[in-house]
Length: 512
Ligand SMILES: [Zn+2]
Image 1 (tube, rainbow, N blue to C red):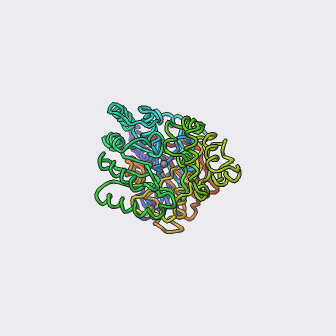
Image 2: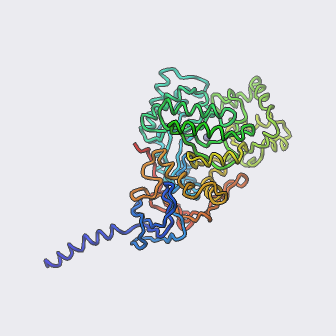
Image 3: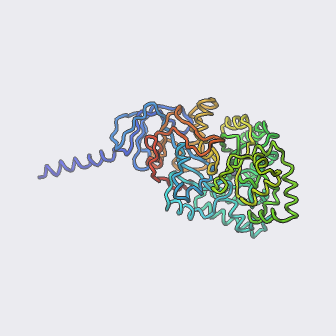
């Protein structure tokens, strides 16, 4: 009897240890790009629960599922630092985030362009209740804060207003926001002046956060806008990040050189300034922002629509619209997720003038009166500027996805398929780094963005030559192709190229 007990005693720890060793998934013999920018190396990777439990040379390990990774690239899942996936996450049909996971994206940031709430916990609870196809991190947005304290009209804050706004930024930061986000093209943020933003950024700085911005101008006034970002970074003493960096408008084509020189000078002087970018020559935003004079936007959509019926305002708006050239009107194309207006998708303002037999001022007014939130693509960028920005070591991949635009469906795949493989602008390790390790580090995302033992198992497995971006500026809502496996927190959301319909995403709070 004693012997048996002894034997069992010897056996049990052994059995326990062996069970401990069993991985949920073991991907053997893949070429691992670890996200740090290092070249690929042949490795096997073990996943247990939601973490990477092994990275090494062994190819024989016990696992519930073994995947032969021979000939495949294994890398961290992509992190998308600028999205409008907020709305997707609140809808049971879209919370899977298929357009993103089909590209290999395993984490999205929301609250971009200053649109995000300061009630991060409440927002995160909502997402968690529904479940998420990918992980979610959030910015605290300037828009709702200014709107709550000052409304949407042209107003400047007094001291008490500013204190009230600072408290709301503080709430967002305490609840785990990555930093303060602004979209200075949009009402009511458009009315703010730099010192106000600096005061709010100081609160983000206190919590180790970042200042992330859609700049005031991405066209004629771009240099001043970059200077504003720089002064915010310097004065509030925090890292700054320019979202969807671009130069818009034919008159400005080629000016990426000026922007790059300015940013490189400040980086050399010690400022932590970076940017993200999507690789398409057309942008997408509310049509009103490009069509109307600033004053006509004050107060929000309802007030804008009132102005479109007010004889005095209407006269001024029409005079403003009349200045648009045919060439400009050909470059703006309706592209809206709104079902009521989707029959107009793909048509330019010029096309609508022809079709409706109306001059541009009538077309503009009709569109905005009937559909104040209609969005449009603006074919305003030059490919060469996009390439020039993409080569800079401080530029990351960021989709700005969410709307009816290929950037929602094919940003990361375009970078791999086109910029890396076809055009050879940068090697694969860089295409991966600028979408994983670089992003995680800049935004203080804990334990993600690298393939490392103890890190979360956000992992993708693909062959670069099979990665295809099917969405383009004409055929928009086509998912990308090429991911064999996409793991989010150790659970596949794509397995052998099929969606699993699982929702293993987690909300992520900034590392302290
Ligand atoms: Zn934006």
